[in-house]
Length: 86
Image (tube, rainbow, N blue to C red; front, side):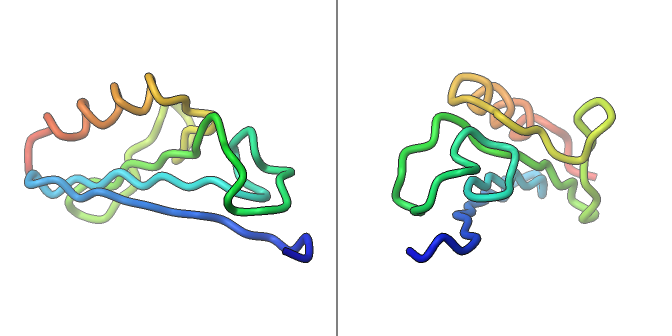
């Protein structure tokens, strides 16, 4: 890569209508923000939760949670999957 901005994103939408979005890459809240290549390993991701109405569900005061490691991500996924559909 030529050093330009890049990112990788994935999301899951659960049967309850809630969605979790995970991103990592340059200029994001993750440990690989200064990486030059999308195939570089990243120890954590930036996470957003979207409710069934399409609204971001806040993490305390922010719409996204940065620097989320694998163990915390698993807990967030479990929490999102257990929410009630609106």
